[in-house]
Amino acid sequence: MSLASAVKARFHTEFGELPAFIVRAPGRVNLIGEHTDYNDGFVFPMAIDRAAWIALRPRADNRVLAISIDMGDRREFALDDLPRPSTVDWIDYLIGVAWALQGRGHALRGWEGVLSGDVPIGSGLSSSASLELATARAFHAVSGFTWDAAAMALACQSAENQWLGVNCGIMDQMISAAGVQDRALLIDCRSLETYSAPLPPSAAVVILDTNTRRGLVDSAYNQRRAQCEAASRHFGVAALRDVERKTFERRADELEPLMRRRARHVISENKRTLRARAAMDAGDAAALGQLMVESHISLRDDFEVSSPALDAIVDCANAEASCYGARMTGAGFGGCAVALVRAQSAGDFVERVQACYRAATGNEAILYITAASRGTETVYPQASN
Ligand code: ADP
Ligand code: MG
Image 1 (cartoon, rainbow, N blue to C red):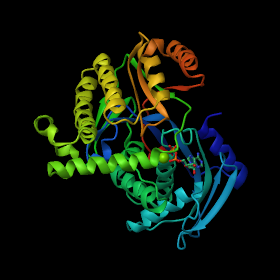
Image 2 (cartoon, rainbow, N blue to C red; image 1 turned 180 degrees about the horizontal axis):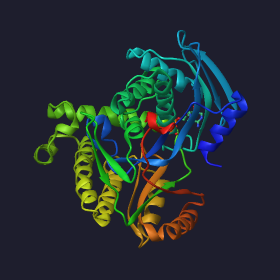
Image 3 (cartoon, protein in one colour; image 1 turned 90 degrees about the vertical axis):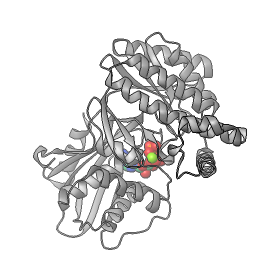
């Protein structure tokens, strides 16, 4: 049963009628542009065909009642008395979004509904952003404020940063809000301008989950951020985004070797990400794949955020003749890689990479053949979209 049918059927069981609205918001995978977002740079993600879904109806009072099928849980809160999170629980994402929307002056109405998602939790495909944007869309459906994708993404990011205390850039929320079917979205993380480019028609995107997670991700992430900030201070600019490659090459010796490598990753990755736009516009899967290969090498050697498991799965993928290119994706130290693969060979690719990774590490990978989907939307009724 599809998730749309699942939330609808459960809604009927709980509330004795059909929902007034069904909304969905997707997870994402980043094709290229890694660790560039907090340097005011460029990222190039796509929304995936996995999403959080909410079936709901408005309430006359100012309460929200949410039933999570996946958590087997039912929670309620009042919009005029938002409870601060103690330990972060799934309902806190909904409360945080309500807080952020109210903080931006939106008058919210209450609702009740059923929620379920198929973005795997904690794999780096951003189930949290999908839940936040689905929640924002639910409030939009019952409250009727104007939907602006970038404004909603910023509100959801501030919910995650300030209400939940999780440090993240704008990419996850922006792509979940503004994804385009069959296209990837180049995002300028400084201006939030977007440009959608078609995925090469011959290619499928495969997500390769190493099934490994590392505990040190947060501290390493904060350390990389600090190193980038120090490097940009050295160059006297607001962010590494502003350092031209030529300037960097001329002045690279001024930086000590570690800082030099960190800065070189960010500066070269921004360049690769802009070149990826040209490759996509030209429908050139081979060129895009090559940029992904170079991105991985830079993340592995200069930025040092890969891991043995990520390197193993990327090597397995790149060894396949059907693979245009593969790289780690997300913050790193475990989690997922992403590969661009000849569409007609994708099934075969999945089986062979699974076997290769098992032989190399003794671990089982989880692979998803995915498609670029639309961003956050009201699925029912369609006219309110
Ligand atoms: P991810 O990398 O998937 O975004 P996070 O740790 O940032 O991982 O967010 C995962 C959290 O988001 C879960 O622990 C849960 O609280 C919430 N969440 C995500 N998807 C769902 C869902 N379908 N139902 C309920 N809560 C969810
Ligand atoms: Mg998250």
